[in-house]
Length: 77
Image 1: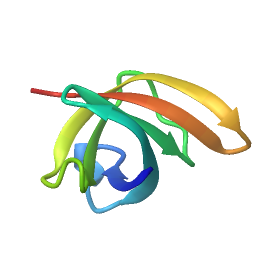
Image 2 (image 1 turned 90 degrees about the vertical axis):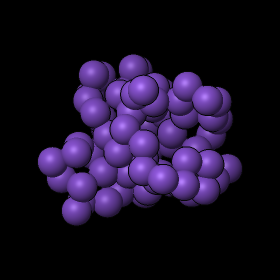
Image 3 (image 1 turned 90 degrees about the horizontal axis):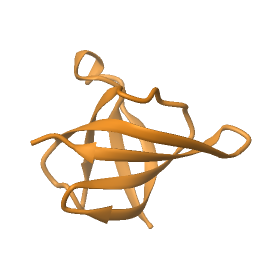
């Protein structure tokens, strides 16, 4: 898995959180996060897979452990 950094919203791009990329494609990523995100929330993602910051929308979220979440993000075009 690859490390990713993300900002929970474009307005809070100075707040950077870390997660792990479980899966990715040209249209989005599956992120393992330690903080819950809301469906429809916009985030900014930066990783080796997406070296320039990319805006993405949270499409789904699943709790997979105590304070651990699997999150589906769709890149915005």
